[in-house]
Every structure is written in C-alpha cells, then in structure tokens.
Amino acid sequence: MASTDPDLPRDSWVCSLAEEAEEEASNNKAMEEFLTTADKASLQKQRRMIKNRESAARSRERKQAYTLELECLVLQLEAENTRLLEEQAHIKRQRYNHLLHTIIPVIHKRKPRPMLRRLNSLPW
Image (tube, rainbow, N blue to C red; front, side, top):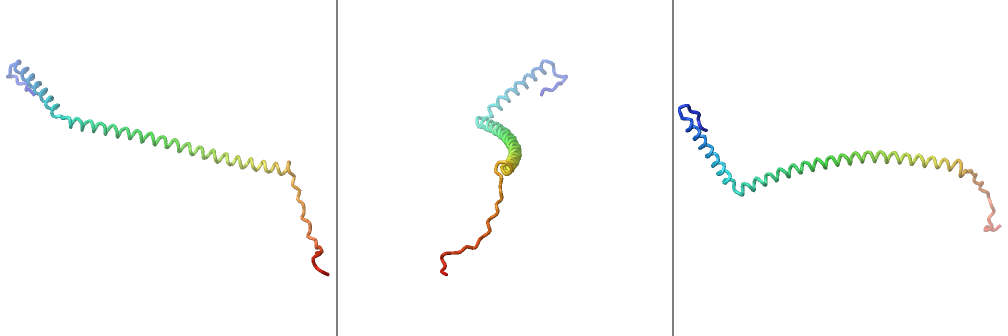
C-alpha cells in the first residue's frame, strides 16, 4: 500500500496508488492462471461432494419423518384392530345367547337307563 507521506507531492502519491492497483490486478490474473483446470476440477468436485452430503442429509430427514409417520399409523391401526376384535367377540357372544334363548330352545333329555336284555346267541 502506498504510504501517505506528506513529503511526497500529491501527484506522485496518486501515481503510486495507481501502480499498486495495477500490481494487484496483475496478481489476480496470475492467481487465475495459477488455478489450472485440475484445480478447478477439484473445486467442482468438492462443491459436488458438499451438495451431495446436504442432499443425503435432507433425504435421511425425510426418511426419518416418513418412518415416524408410519409408526404412528401402525399404532393407530393396531388400536383400532384390537377394538374391532373385541367388538366382534361381543357381538358373537350376543348372537349365541340370542340363539340359545329365543330361536333354538334347548331341551335337555335324559339318557335312557341301560336295560338288561336277553341275547339270543346264548344257548339255554
């Protein structure tokens, strides 16, 4: 950088600033030339890797949210299934009791007592 030396005339100070600006511009050009295609390719590769990592992180978050949603749905469906099975068993018991009492009256018959009989196969 140019020094603001009060002993230097104003024109020479401006000239030194202009020279420094030209030097900086030439340094930038040299730096651009220094970045070869291999360096540019490695920068692109790094950018792609960063984007890929970010995309993979977003994908994992979406997958985790979807998994949590499915787990919640499973719990709801299991609760509904249990409720419906209990309701089905209750209705089945009601229907059976209704059949027993109204439609099919059950009459308990006693078994006849075993009787002694004569067999014709034995000789007298």
